[in-house]
Image (cartoon, rainbow, N blue to C red):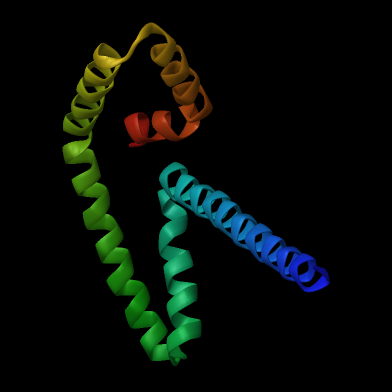
Length: 128
């Protein structure tokens, strides 16, 4: 019986660790994605720092990397401006369609979900 309790305790501690890891990872990933959507200008410096450290780039490679990523950032901004109206329309249509299939109770929960995620959703809709 003593061994069973010990094994059960170890299993519970392991399970608690797994749950904490999953929840913690979700929180961190959601925060990082939210920051990237709200502040896309912070993505390039983050990528540059990460690659410089991981690839151990020298000064010349860093300069070349900066030019490459700056050009890519400019091109992505242009695409974002071009496709923003279409994205907003698609998201609005999806929102209306989702609302249509929900029960009144589910619509209330969906509305609460949208309120909790409003900063991220607004950033997607409005960011230049």
